[in-house]
Amino acid sequence: MKKFILGAMMMLATGTANAADISLPQHTEKGGMPLMEAMAARRTGRTFDTKMLSDQQLADLLWATWGISSADGKRVVPTARNTQDIELYVLLPSGSYRYDAAGNVLKQLGDKDLRSHLASQPFAMDAPVHLLFVTKDKKYGEMHAGSMYQNTGLYCASAGLNCVVRGLYDRAEMKETLGLEGDNEVVITLAAGYPKAE
Ligand SMILES: Cc1cc2nc3c(=O)[nH]c(=O)nc-3n(C[C@H](O)[C@H](O)[C@H](O)COP(=O)(O)O)c2cc1C
Image (cartoon, rainbow, N blue to C red; front, side):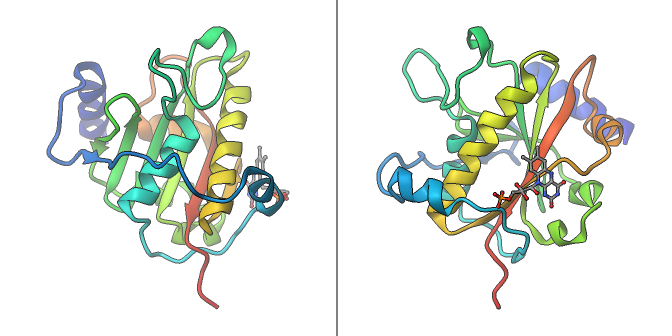
């Protein structure tokens, strides 16, 4: 575990490219469901197929959640004084990652499947994608995370995917598992994937 944490910290500090990083395709800005229909369709879904999302779906889901949407670096969601003081971590079967929106890449932090650390609700374990919202901003961080997961939910509704926001996990354990420093915490999580076939 120490090795994983150290490696993760070094990669975060240096921004080093890693062969195991996942380069994402350009996100889609056209198409999808009309906004009002997506708002009406957004619902928590708690069944998941283990099938992985396509790279395009992953790119679109991440962009909808925390992408950059203007030339001056503003995001798809507002943040207080535009601090953008939140990081999106992603757990996949292939490992753990940090979403680098500017580089449109998932930076690998470790190659272990850490999804079982979120196992408090067994139904979520089939979901191939887990988002972890990490911030040290005690005043606004959770609000920012809420704006973000709402966007994820609208994207999932539009794309026919299931997702569930999850507060039922051990914050202290996730902080240690990810090697988060200082006041950084996982303030909320979200599981996403295809609905389980009937
Ligand atoms: C902050 C937050 C935390 C939540 N935590 C959990 C959770 O740990 N487990 C779960 O199954 N659902 C969780 N939910 C989902 C809610 O139960 C769900 O949003 C609510 O029942 C309303 O249903 P809807 O999303 O379909 O409108 C959470 C939702 C929010 C906004």
